[in-house]
Image 1 (tube, rainbow, N blue to C red):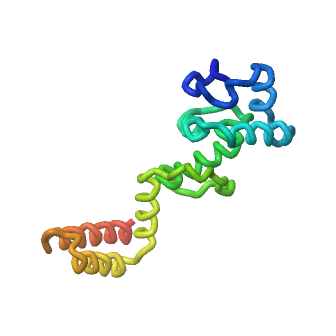
Image 2: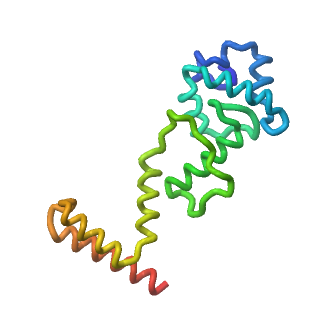
Image 3: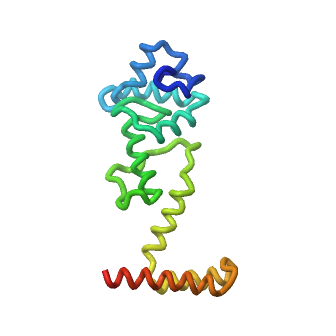
Length: 164
């Protein structure tokens, strides 16, 4: 990439390259020009700001091709789709397989919470109520009334599903 297009990425390994060279490698179509894309990924792999670059890529809309933060544009799109699914913003899993993310990339707390909600949604009414009793035993609730309120909520949700 280049500092002109991505000013917050100053100090990146790609900003030291001549503009024509940077465009050649980082704007390559990974499917038609795999060598150029692999070269760009290798440059990113040794870059000190790669985590920030990938984080910026996950927050923005980018072109249909190229390498950003060590990942191809298509891998970033797939990662963003999986991120939306993990956060519960999307009901069905993406059609593409989950791309491999760099070791430093950590999922957000929202994606962890959505995964917990999906696991709970697959439980029966009885299993969910039993979970409340286990939480009471562990001391999760300050009072028994809080646990009863939670069971009432689960019951009302189960009734809505049965009547729908």
